[in-house]
Image (cartoon, rainbow, N blue to C red; front, side, top):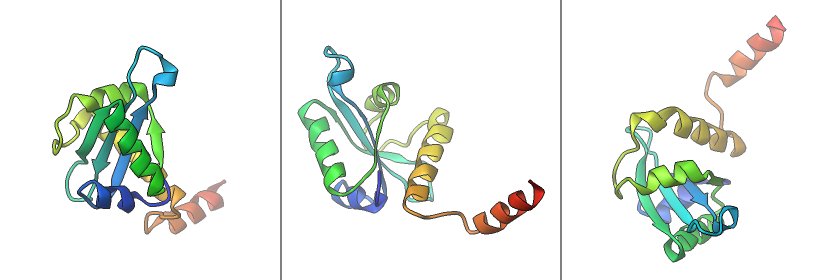
Length: 126
């Protein structure tokens, strides 16, 4: 996901994206996997693309070309492969995916509206 979450989703049917990949270099017997998510802020993130081997490599290439941050997590990728394209992530993944999306927003310099006030309050208390 990195510099812009919007770019990958524009290419893979949506508005904003998340890409999770698992490379075979971690385990020579495990195929390369990738999944892309779309999050519009109105509902749970949805699977917009997924695949293994050549399809995964194409998803990863599109993400890299678009400047999208790629999160590598074999367990997450294996789980996402079980979902269908267009399916929302299950509630069990909400916190993990929310943390990844928040991290990506911070990398892009985007912070919650009240972040400045919260940061000032924390600094005053410390």
